[in-house]
Every structure is written in structure tokens, then in C-alpha cells.
Length: 183
Image (cartoon, rainbow, N blue to C red; front, side, top):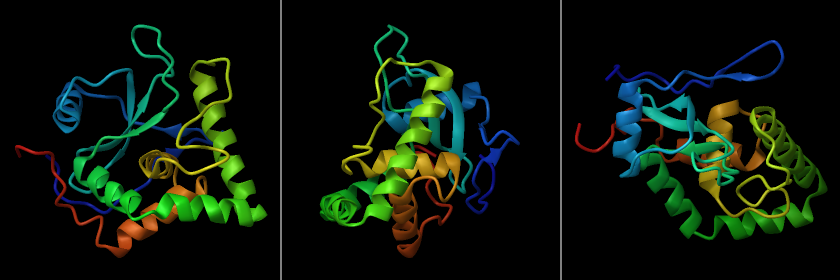
């Protein structure tokens, strides 16, 4: 496992497309451990935790059996998932949705996040519908998805992913000690 390093966002090409890492056999095994099951529809590692293990993966728009899978970015790090789960349990998503309804500027940024997510997914394979993930664009229902979107694409793309990341940083993440279980 690589030594601890600061969180870095992915590289972006001149066309604005995120550049992700290929999934290695070692990554696939770590992700299997993280999820407690074999990973499905893996395309790439989109972000890594400071300890070096995958934190976010990019998935195909369809599972291997052809079932649509609209979640393009999937948070795999168990420590991050647990931290985000605590934020969700606090009622934060309800408060975010209320702000979304009251703040047209925020609603516009969130709609643009939805459009970006949809465009990236459809560039891989269109699913024939406008459903993305996490409640976009009308409500906030999964902070895991929003954080994964921010970690994969960088700050400024998803306002609720950015807010989630800021809240996690305020509680001490990234600390570099979120290695998968069993290490």
C-alpha cells in the first residue's frame, strides 16, 4: 500500500473530461474487500484515499447483465462511507433539499451537476433516460453519490458534494488512516 499522501483530485483533459486510473487486479481485490462482495461494472479508479486505496470508482452505465446502473461514481472506501452515513443520519439531506427549494442559485448549480453527471454517463453509454443519482436535480437523497462525484470530478462541479467534503475535512478527513479492513 502506498504511503499516506494528501487528497488530490483527478487530472482533467483539455476537453474537460476527467482522467481516471485503470483498475488493477490489486485494486479489484481491495474494492471487493471494501464492498464485501465482488465489484460490478468497474471502469476505473476515479479517486484514492490518502493511504492509496480506491475511494471512488467509475462504473459502467449498465451492469454485466445489461441492467441499467445510473450511479456513475461509487464511493467504496468504508471509512468515508461510514462518515457520510453519519452526516446523512443527522438530517443534513432534508436541510439541503430545503435550501435547494429556497435558493435559485443553488438549484441552478445542482441542475448543472446533474447535467454534467448525465453527459459523462451518456458519453459512455446512454441509458435513454434523464435519471442520474443522489436525487439530482430535484432533491438530495444520497450524500455518498455527491461526495463521490466531487472526489471524481473535483471541486465546483457538485455543490452538495463540495459541502459534504468540507464537512468531512472539518471532522479531520483525510487523515490517511482509512486503509481497508484486514490491513
